[in-house]
Image (cartoon, each protein chain N blue to C red):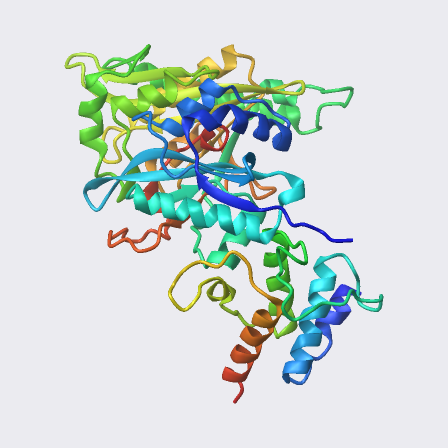
Length: 109
Length: 362
């Protein structure tokens, strides 16, 4: 089930489609396979504090999303540093979606 | 119903925290380390904690990230470095924000202590997490070499010995006879002896070998005594080889044994001879080490050894073989950010001579 979702063609690259991909991936790492009723996820939900993802789960989420988007290396670590260079302790789902949209747009021909 | 999130904060660990840290690590890993041992480990040679941090929920310690301070020689100078170990968070607090808070505090402490390098033996999960969250680059794996003894070939726990056991045992015996002949000729000029404490002769030896590899843990007498003589709870066998006429040290080895289920495993924690010196010293040290390990009824012994070195070649000639299965022996090197230090070729494991043995289990 997981592999079939990864192998599906990535969604069209719109923010809505990226949102769907990210929430599907979050549910995967939370142990909810595609096809089951997903947990409602709010855009401002924090991956750690609100959704309860561990550091390893976030690393797995990054791996899943990378595979989902054709295995292209994405600099996920830049997500955890703010504009002043300080390390962030947590990030929101919307920040992750914005990060993906930014990088996917940048790589469009 | 409202859910109140625990308020987690990370701060530098103090010596007074170590009793609570010992309880915490016991709860997480199921193995108790004595407070004296934690004090020894995280204090390093200077006895001062550097970089170790705790995660607290109000005033209770719920997470820990340990750093063992060591000195590393790089670019011709000695610097303070830290080896990360004993990282754990209680399961109910194991969340991204908790881990990042711990990591953030740790990096701040390392920078405040002017630590230029942090490294560790990371398992695959930790390596994956660090590279994803921090973008840390890791060194290639350093190969683990193993050396079975005849004990490993016996039937164990009701299982028959493997069909190739007699052939392998014969090969190992043949290698040992060859090595013994070689050693007999070497012994004319060299003396092998057991060592109670490392002394100033070892300081001289360190000056001789300090440029053998671009980046090395400083193996002077102070470090070696702290690490292998004064370590609470660990027993090490220390062997030194010296020139009979001049007394000059030509190399040393440190060995340990661990028991696991019905097996006894040996480990070569240190094996050091000059890279460009008389390689007979390496053969004599390995032969003596194997003899001692055999006397302890060891089934198998292992050592992490860099590729393309004279020591690896010598170990192979004494029956050590690369471990084929699993990802054991991974050594990850994580560089502290913002350092101007030139660690040339740091991503090539051949440029490092850190710990060779039980650094992940101290």
